[in-house]
Image 1: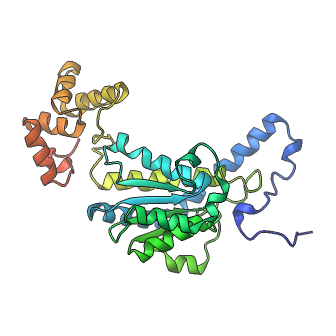
Image 2: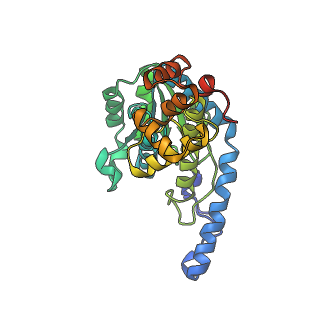
Image 3: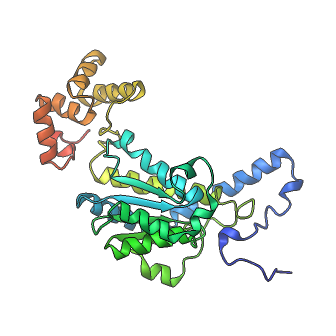
Length: 303
């Protein structure tokens, strides 16, 4: 018999395939979780048109000097902050270009602040603190679709003229679709453990955020071929990667590549232009600025 307390949100429903998970062996639990996780990629793929629209909004914001700002609570908020934090080392972006706002602030990254998600006023204040405006794109992340903190932030962002999007893992309602510039809704279905959205919904969220920022950075010219050429050397791992990129793209011996990278101030894209165009660092930077940072316009196709 169906319970009258059945929640209409997919994220809160019971998964019929895991109703007796507590009786399974360890191997069976692992296999069940794996089988459920395999559904995630297909659910995300179904949202490719909406994800494409989100990327276009992000790129337009970047080209107008605006920012991508994620807003979320709990797992959703942490994933937004994580994606934002990975942009500077990977693509050499200014830390302000992609930002994450999480309910409860920085301490919520390491210790749950569950009550914070119910305070929409705090979210509006966070939007005001960042001086959000018409050039910005604010993406709310709430897998259940109902988090007050997220809705409060988006409402305030729209009041300030920003464009907004919503990422959730349940059926979007008409008002939500009408309110925002884009709604992304990968329907991954109920979790193995009811309501534990750090699982399939969290995986889907990370996949969507990765896709949005990666595609946006490609469109902004921060990738050459499939190489992350806009990285800034800040550790030995990145120095090694930068030198290997120069060996491949400029055709240099490793010691020469290391010296060129040093001369370019540790910026791989600048070093590539220096090597391919035989110019100094200042001229390389000027050429890149003139080409809006798109390296292929300066040195030609990687092939």
